[in-house]
Image (cartoon, rainbow, N blue to C red):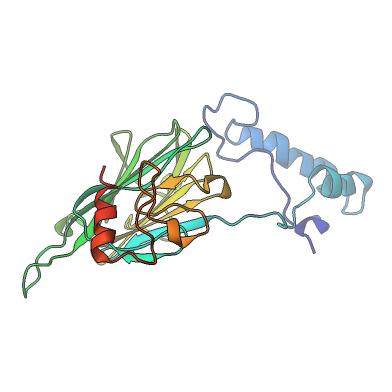
Length: 278
């Protein structure tokens, strides 16, 4: 049963309560657009008339009919975590211990221009010996003409309050208060879950539908990138070429064929990863 079958069920809104930049166009004014296009029609058509009134029936089944999600296409995801372990968009796992700044995912097409970069640094020495692995310490992302959003891991001695630094267009932003949990910038939204108080979990959503999620836990940074179907067959970088086929995940940044994932050994994987260096 669809939620709009009842008056108190959900229904699609035409304007977001927080508005949308540049905030001075139709349907984009914070609060006012939502009140005018969504709240007032519900009161006049349904709440003040009755659930089975002609106005409410028209509102629920014709003007604001809900969707049953039959045509929903879930996004694909790629992730990097640990020292570092990588799962590509086609779900191929491998380990890459490069040190420096690398392209996690890059798209350069007529429709989309996405760039997500990661910084990998050597793991701090432990009480036994020097650690030879590397770890993710910072992520920067930009989509089309959006703001540049950078998320950095704070030093271990500086995480008593904030675990991550969030920098948007060169300015640090914070999510301490409830009113700051969701912040809008040029063509993107940056927010933290309401139950996270130490700024250890940051989510970036772009206007194109791409999303970047950054999490810190016990000194290690993990990142996921979510892409809608329109990004298929055009991705490059450490997260691979998203074609629903693992064998061509290691396509080189210039589009030429790299080592096949089936035959790739550690040396071939490292060679491929170094070609994704920014």
